[in-house]
Image 1 (cartoon, rainbow, N blue to C red):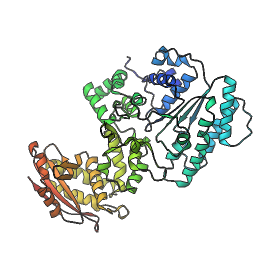
Image 2 (cartoon, rainbow, N blue to C red; image 1 turned 90 degrees about the horizontal axis):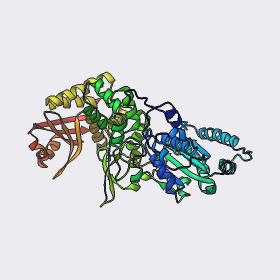
Image 3 (cartoon, helix red, strand yellow; image 1 turned 90 degrees about the vertical axis):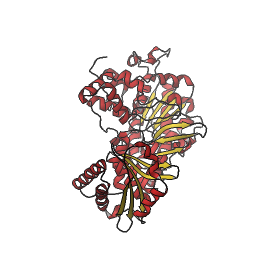
Image 4 (cartoon, one colour; image 1 turned 30 degrees about the vertical axis):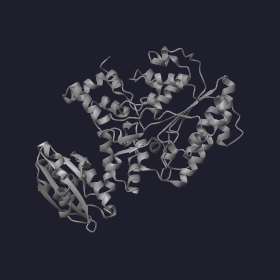
Length: 521
């Protein structure tokens, strides 16, 4: 493979990608699975920037019979007849939908184009009737049933997830369009929808009892994203260039890519998946950086977690059923489903005996970006300059084993909490402490289990282990006594590093760390 590669960052059009000789990870075997399966309706949910749009574009050109674009790919070796079908691509990812009328303009432009193409005399302004007429006309004119591809079918809903008025408006508009999938079934060869969420109350799911949801199926687990094998097969030149620029081996470069961008999993037996957006950017830049977070919805997630007073350590390491992850209430979204569907949590393992998925944060890129957004919802420190100085000193003191000096820095940090962001309950204090410790780069474990309970926070540096118990409106003596009585430190005695126990008391009245006690064992 030539050392110079064209990475199609942001390119979601299969034709442009192929004609421009850009790198393409061959996913066309999934097309064969879809067309020979016999199902008429498909749904796939994946987080944003995971290649859903590119896969729909690939489907589009496949059904349009553009065989020349597929030369050398798997699907070109099959016995598909390559006769063109009329394809309707409904891309709802083209607007922000902050105003209720935005969808009308998007739909009307598409309908006008299709009505012109298939010689439809517009006699009705009703969306449902117009779409029905278009589908029938296309079938009649071409002699072939139509293919409907809906990209980000839920974008108007997700964009207004906390706006009841807009939600109802968009739900009614979308229902009018999607209802044709059932009423016009005789004219349809295939419907393939993608999105972030599966909104059960929307007609597309309530009306179609034969829709095939492939979101959690093992056979479609890596339909989007990049597997380990695909990374090593397709990105060798980029990995070599990254390794050279960083002055490390290719093996070390792969380890860094895995640590930062791997870890997604979308089915019980599915492979681990790398984020394609992040990998493409890292290869193009020859640099490990945070690329994906700005494309997600961290502020919506943060507001939801704060609204339900979530225990963050538990939320980021939990078990759930498949049903817990599928549905999403439009007006009061449950945090677990929202975190999973937006890509901030992913499947880590599946336990068939209890039929539960174990969830966790996919990788360092996701954790770093999410925690940075979450922390201001629990605390808001002073100026950036002051904050950087306090945090830098705190990390230094933890590394050096000076627990008292590190706690003074923490006290100063929490003293900068703005009164509007006050610590109004114990859970908020625990969340803020956990987020801050993890964000500053210290190896942190929350709710570390022992035979006699769970330790609030464990911090490990190269030379020390810190066992920390947090109290709220109590006393540091009580916190330290709990560590001693429950023998929390015994868990780490075989490690060899000195163990420093810290009992911390946070005051709801002063909204800061009131006092602390330390003991080395």
